[in-house]
Length: 444
Image 1 (cartoon, rainbow, N blue to C red):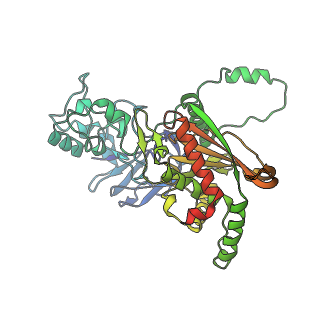
Image 2 (tube, rainbow, N blue to C red; image 1 turned 60 degrees about the horizontal axis):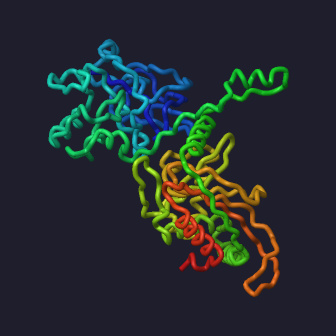
Image 3 (spheres, helix red, strand yellow; image 1 turned 135 degrees about the vertical axis):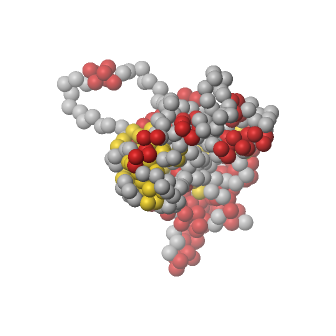
């Protein structure tokens, strides 16, 4: 039976994408792992690989098509012995893909679960297929049916995350008989909260256009990245109870230590930035205050063991937050090299989703732009974000009561009060401050 190739979910928040380019044509033979097309998401252009072997029988979506919904058919794959005449046997989905269907796991970007789907014909081939609560047929892969039968699970009570709500292996393999439908729907394995649509501002497009009638302006169409940033930050400010903690950090010891290290590292071509020290300080602070190394997951919190620190990188038209995983275990030079690589590929939009998703904590540094201090918006599901200002010379009073001059950097910790309470946030910020003001201890 011909197989429909579906638009894959290349990230947990992807709902649609642009089919940028086909790398195969009708009649071409493909094997598992062959790159078939390039797909543009809101963040990057990614290659989509075949997960089965066969012949491209028909291309349904032309290259350059924008707004292709996840799980909608983009091509038809023929098996050995089949021809284009057999394509008519593939049934169209009886209903559009559910808006709440869980996307593919980010750990399997090139071959997301459910990336290929058969038409209704295959599902109806099993005479004993279970019925849903409303009497409709339940669509599930044969493997998912077998696992469910072995565990005594009722498929009618399980929400599928595959194409068009199809139940796949990932939906059933972690369940037991006592699990509820809510658990299946709310916590897909490896998933992340879906970005909500941006809420109305109170002024419609027509109203705003009328306000500026007769004025000279350029209308800028929102691209996918800008739409996603607007939606996620609107969601963050509306749903996350932010509170803010501020501290001044003295940098003179760090600046002297950095200069000494850079001189010694010069033969290796390594030059450490202040930001590298900030990343290390935050990573270690999350280990020193492990209760703060947590994220909000809807109806629970996840307390992370490693320090996975995200760092905001400005690019044309938006920003990325690549994640440095296990940052507490890496040397300053390793963090520096990894950050430079991630930032360069972020600006070229060449990051894979697993490189900018996840983490429990983020850093946003605007000091290089001369900003003294600011408040950053938490990037869900993170528990906190550190906003870093510029290091500037200021008069200070030392421990002996004498007035002197010191290089002072102002930082603000934005905290999700659902995850981190005030005293815990203050303890975390104190640990960050201590690490930066005594940089030698970060090498101990």
